[in-house]
Length: 210
Ligand code: AMP
Image (cartoon, rainbow, N blue to C red; front, top):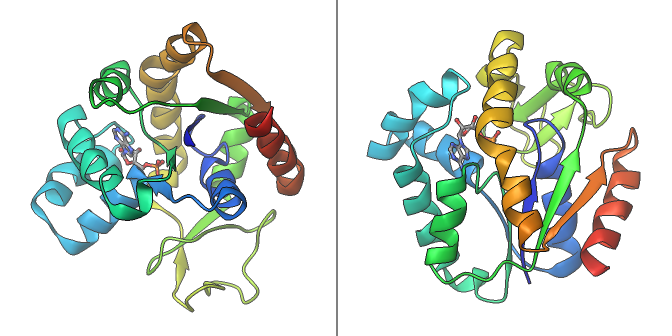
């Protein structure tokens, strides 16, 4: 099954992608994580992507389409995958169609902007493995230390309040039109993000099965 998770930054797509990954045994593919790894490794496209990411803007379509195409051609993605953070523009969705990829379902995780601003201010990520936490909703066992790998957890540069506003604006302008794009194809299902992550997860899995 090939799935897309759609939603504003901070709506909880990453967490839901992990839940689906465990339940369906298909890889969760996050272009954001891949880009952050490239920035850290100092690769050519990492260097190109960094300025846009720090500013809360989108990285150019050709860069992300290129990395996504390579990733979905890897062996572990041949029985299906969950895309988290891709597509983010209509041209990216069109590129996916042009690759001949059949998308079975697009799950939108809806959370109101005000709530997102509140949530992102508490988000922490592991600077080593990229695992995501929240000081209130998903704290690490030991403050500042990743449960998974023991790395240091930090505030993402693009989670600074001013950048969050820019990211939300970008989402509404560039990404939200994808809801129409996939609704027209009869593939869009919307899940309302709940206070309890486990409740959202139940709704997400139901949306995929239904
Ligand atoms: P995320 O972790 O999904 O919030 O992504 C972090 C940042 O990476 C975004 O704010 C963008 O700058 C960039 N990014 C991730 N995925 C894409 C995409 N599909 N298209 C363009 N930029 C992206």
